[in-house]
Length: 287
Image 1: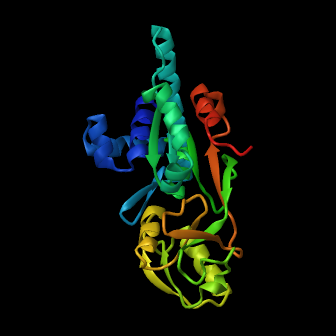
Image 2 (image 1 turned 45 degrees about the vertical axis):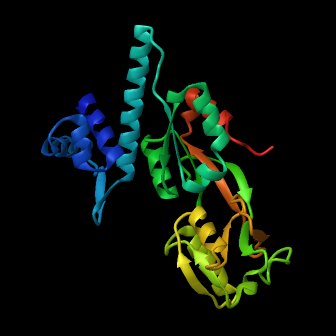
Image 3 (image 1 turned 120 degrees about the horizontal axis):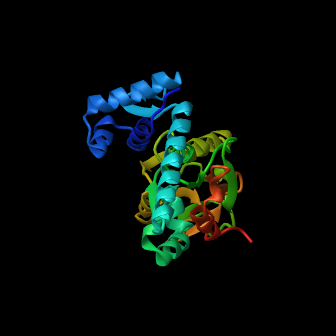
């Protein structure tokens, strides 16, 4: 196979954007020229590297592997050239995580990394599916998220586990309970994530199994907005136990919902990179 370094570098940029227009602009070539590069690389390797899902482009598993190799190749070359020139290697380590992890788990980790060297860390904000794709393709070195199923192709380590809790106003009938069950929410209005979000799916399954009748007060994206609606009196909400209860609300463990575990994921060889090892050392691992 005759695979050029230029083709790999171009595909790495395309894989980062998953958009031909933006990738072509970064590469300073025309969009048709980038289409040709990606198509020829796919033909040379004999595998489709991406596919279209509606209006979105998504890498195939082979595309993720090629993108990861392309980025590793580019990093090795950049590292060699830095050493050859006697200059420090300046590329950052990339962390991908969602809103909850950034807000409630990783603050001290990020502050510590940035205090040592502000250019040493780059962050990607994404959901758990995007996080896995970023780590698999090499776009991110490390990812953090709550996972429904642990990936068998990546190292996955438990970072922190929390119960699911009910946020309820201090004067509510459930506020004096030490804990609650889903059947205790019969007749309540709940602030919930949008449809198809993992937490919404799990919650609806649990409420259905408990025979609980409930209504949607409002759908909201992200724990801060969900919590804000509860403080306004719109409804009650079940959130991850890492979310702090604001003034006027109390948190009651929901005993018939499973605990939530955040995992750190990375490629098996990632810890060979000193930058990644340094980042992992700063994580708030359980004692």
